[in-house]
Length: 253
Image (cartoon, rainbow, N blue to C red; front, side, top):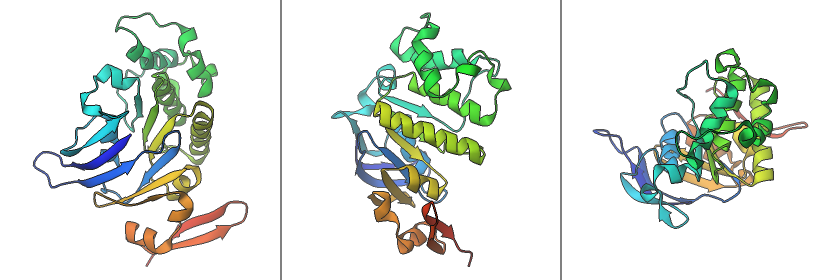
């Protein structure tokens, strides 16, 4: 996927993203980080084809994603959003089956066997017959992930997937995503709020501020106190933590 001079603004609003040009690293984990209001989630929606650029192009396999029909695009790109609209009394198995609709006609009868691998990959086998309303936030997030994986996408996009999750479920979700990337070679693109989480799981980082892509590169390149302080407009220290490695700390003024 290629972004070429991509800009975007909402109707009657100033420009939110300005001339973003970059290449998505295929088969890798990319995290987008930056302060609130920087345009991270909007950038993800543009890459998902949910929004169309006000200027510039996003190409997938040398074709503008704006020209790819929605159903065909759903077999290439899957999205896990912060908010998901579905009836809470739906069973886990049925929610995951919804992800297969991009490969079938609307009234297709999708078997349990067809989604079994996605249920297993997200550790939902014991919950498959449960309703969404009976699950914890972390368990629900795994259901949405399984449904996205059922699209069998090349690209998996996640918008702050650890929001509302406690430390245990955050770690569990990150482990699942790492395994999926390594085993299935899915390109994973995430907007993450937790900087240290982003640095630990990612193969590449994009640092965004005020609608501009300020820096890209491997995490080791981005462990730069001055760079991070300018991005987040706060005092940053990078410390070494035993058995963990480098850890980014915000120091109040």
